[in-house]
Length: 375
Image (cartoon, rainbow, N blue to C red; front, side):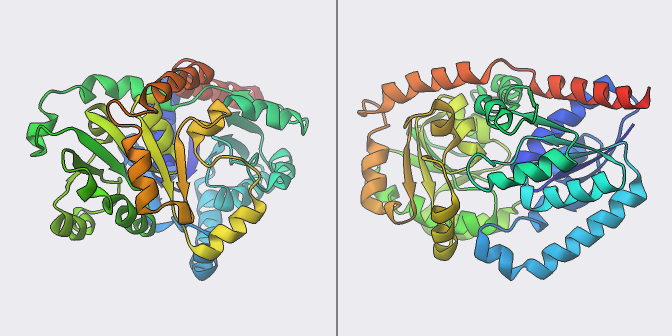
């Protein structure tokens, strides 16, 4: 069968690549066309557009780039019709993907949504669009099935695909030559995960590196984002003398004592690797004000949302400052006041997410739903 996938950021590229791998087992004749990234391309997708050219963060940024976004909408619609897929598989990225769901459904194409938009946080009215245009929704967070049940929309909870990723990569992450091949010292490591978009990374690294001199016994190491060229990071490495590692985020986390992490999927990755962290976020001021008005959740990090309590510190907007960062980081280092409690709470989060195999479960269900239609 023919599958058309759309992922708009690095985490979507990662999870879609694992799904594609599982789909090829369930459907050996599978072919893929996609908007996504290098990982999806490596699994055999004919890549239409790379996510690094699609990612606009915040309300103001979207407004500024609206002509480009509208052009992408029209191009994608034509491309879907030309490809004639058996199924359109959407991975998160709701601003773009919900429009594509409506378009595909009206043209008789089956629509599967893998990794639900965070409608439980804001714009829950979009459930109406999903009920009307999405054939099946596959959710990865335990409370999402309950959320959709309130709207009488049955979904498939398949577990979190990050558990698959962690299981596959942990063996390599333990490599003893990690420090040597990256020219790192023997000092304990504080990992910096500043995000996946250039605008985001620039903002977050400025704040994260502001506290470097207050921890002279540690080395700060940046995890480079997929799709961001090495030259982009050179400005930071020249002036701060920090190291950057490429395509080695899990190796870095495995060897780190603590981490400063930009809010997003990386917070959950860090938790599953059992590294105490401080969650950081600073966006466009006006976008932040709008978000405060419309977002309905108590926390911004997946770690705290899944635990349904404060596990890790969240420093947002004006709270993301040097004094708060220093205090929060000290509390999670060796012998810090919060370190042992955080690691205990991480285990509870793992238990809530269930076991590995999310990608395989999703692929199996998708193929079964498609085969039922063909009969």
